[in-house]
Length: 206
Image 1 (cartoon, rainbow, N blue to C red):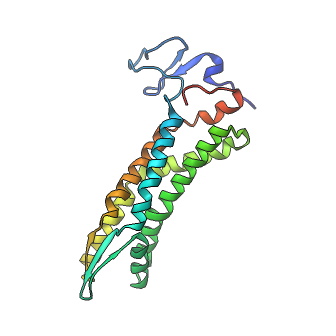
Image 2 (cartoon, rainbow, N blue to C red):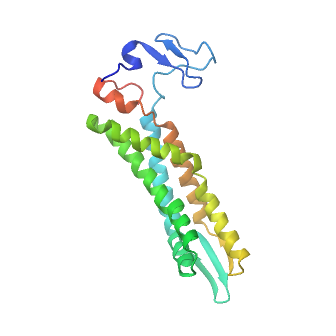
Image 3 (tube, helix red, strand yellow):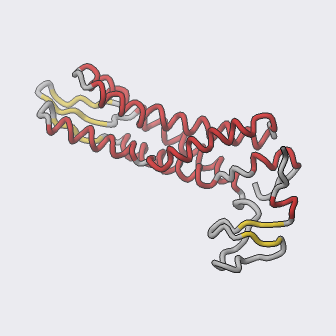
């Protein structure tokens, strides 16, 4: 069953307090916010933040994330080196958490964001529901986006607490933090209603 959109019924939703108004009103009667039919330039902002996150993820995975200082000397390592390090020392749970939070999740979020933007850009109406399900997943994950950063801090603390070696964060930690923030902003700026404007011929402020 097809339901009419807010645009078709002549309504506009306040993006702050979610009060519904008739089209033609410029400010919300409840909270006074400026009314927009869709998040202004949603696709453009999402493209920008997604591309920025991709650029930050490159050095985040190539530069040293941590520097292990042991009896053998200083040994800088990337994120994957850290995963392998803990795996070799029998800390399989920590290795799994680091891989999931610091490798799989960031690349999964970027991939989904690119897919959503391509659906909107090329107007793939047959993939609307699939795109919406994926958006809900990354939006849900976004609540714990900073877990990636806390994992790095936890990793350093655990190793030092266990007297295995001394670990300090490397330059990749900063670029990784920026990548996480960029994916969070991209997710927040993407207006999922654009997916359902496709088959209605609506373009709006994308």
